[in-house]
Length: 173
Image 1 (cartoon, rainbow, N blue to C red):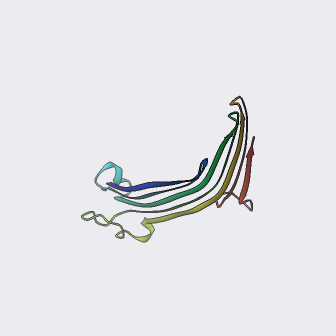
Image 2: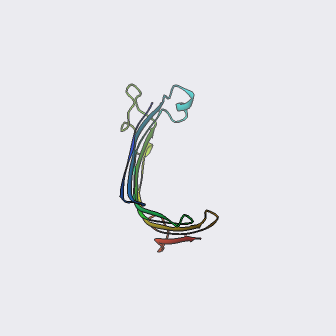
Image 3: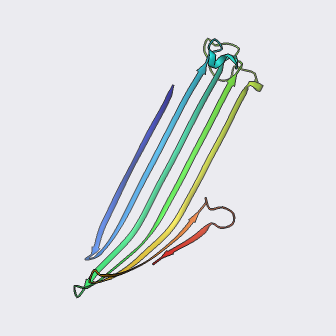
């Protein structure tokens, strides 16, 4: 059998400070909890070569994301359009997986973990906790909606970047 519980949600707030200037914030979260149980009896083909087999897996995953930004746009003399955006983003991901299995089960009346000899048991666990912080910006200019220029910059700091390089800059025009 297997059971999974999943919850997610998000919210967004936006405030128009002045004509053409707004500030917004978005927050979202995902949470997953799962558990699975597997039993193969020594009386059937799948469990026969292991003299009975049990496996249980438990998983917890949580991720949240938040970004806040300010956005400004103005049109001058009906042909010059200028816009600018600046913001920051935070996120965090956590997962915890535990797997346990046993073979050579002494009894199968109520199959559960902890009944087999230690050498017939395996337990593994993996954890992951990573996050990032980013700042980003964009400045755009348009002349008569015919000629356009857009400059972008983003700086990411993340625990998933390898080695001693934990920050990276990205630019485009």
